[in-house]
Length: 121
Image (cartoon, rainbow, N blue to C red; front, side, top):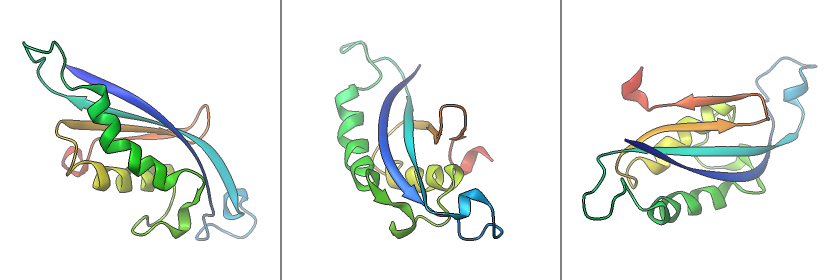
């Protein structure tokens, strides 16, 4: 069984490595939508894979670090594309969120990335 919890944050960035004149090279922001998936067996006693509140306890503080932040200044972020943010999020969450199976990140209503960790290559 796979469950998910959704989070939202606002953040700004620049993609300095892009060619001169590319719109994403300029400072701009996004209203990001993050969906974190956890896979596991349904516990016979509780009837759930994991308490959604437990997911929020792990993911919430990480999202708070990103909310209204300049992503280029986030330690360890690397290139702050949707893909790069997913990889960074995975590194932050995986050690603390057992069963983490997938991250979906939308940077606009129609564009984003899905990441299932380095082992899924």
